[in-house]
Length: 638
Image 1 (cartoon, rainbow, N blue to C red):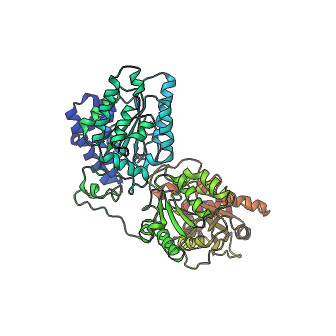
Image 2: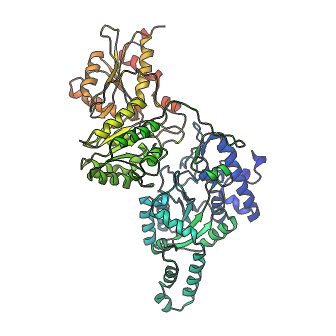
């Protein structure tokens, strides 16, 4: 690899860029882009967004000194060049692989991953914290936040911009404006940024006005404090950088985010300023790979693909949970005109793209603003509509207070659909949906469900559409369901589980296994293995995680004499602990009970089967735990 990248292979620390001429820096840009093409085509990962930040990253690191300077990136969608310029090129073939490089920034992966994040909109707040700490220490390092045009629309970003403008400290925000997040951006701010992009010549006018004001003697300068803004507002009141300037920033831009000489000049000049600066850089997602430039939405996140043929083959398979929800949502909306769909910048990932096409007036994309999405849904529910609020499990965490305060306290029948519940694989701890049972089950009025397969998800979606008494939420995993489960089904009824097979009372050492959602198929497979050893297992599909079917679960546990619960959620506050409490309340606390759940630690990235096994969520471990409960491991038949 070293011979292929003359400059990049020698970069260990960003300060190594200082030894390169501007011409060599341009050559480095080409090498970084080539390395992204080569490596991500093999490993998969976030692709088009990282191709778009190559010049931006090289210019930032050539103009600044890391360390001690600090650059905080918003998520990892745009930070692969950062990883390559911090000495991780040789490890890049392990990207998103088990025990390899993370697809996001991680503080424990590298000292220059100054702040880790997988959720958008955090960079400005975190970087401002670094700047405040610097000021208290009395040091002089530069602090820079790099955000995106979707992330900057989030509430946290504006709270941080407001605070930075008030602090008036040495602080730079770089807006990587590529006109998209994963799907096209939405909202008034997006329209505003579009106007800024269309009139770069206004920045020349603003700079001339600034020069005039600076040449005026005091007190004339103070009297003319608003002159620069006034003249540009008069010429083009909507197109200038007034929002950011009125918040206390020096607005620079729009600048071409792929023009390395200009970027170098901008970032080198900013080093001379000691107050808030906002740099607006226009970039192209997929830069340097034509098919990705043409369809950056498709090429945002990729599986391994062929660089020459552009073939990105995804394995064909059964219907996914995402597709099942999307289809069911359309079916419900066709039957009920009060049903609306809400997503927070994830129409593709949540399965609502087809809903948008079918019912464009009843579809709402709030952008990366989960808190607003939840309370917006609550407002619609209070007005008599039936909102289907589709947000990934890990992202709904950001709206915790809104779910509790605005939905549950008021008992508004918002329907939450939480894709990516449980362990999601290569995206790692920031994206695992490992806590939703714990944080939703504690809320009074909330009804929480989990389907065993895609058919049951469709049935639950229709049930939720008709249920009006309380807010509801259903959690389901990434990918497709297990078609090995029996097809016999019972209707969805609140608080009722489903027994998939019954214990034989004359069986030697029976056991009951209660699975939650994706873990029902695991329980079913474990039951098959136990049957080979003369152990009959009753498999219970929990269905409802709140309220739980205490009567059925306790009855089956009593009949079998022992119970295992399995859930793809954190142990603390999860389903198993609720069941344990129910056993005690029923006077069955003496029944041996094992809870299998995600342990009390953050789970790293890797293939789902591998990390499930690491968490004890495997058939082998269920069988082993069953024999521990039975106390008959020695009777294991050959």
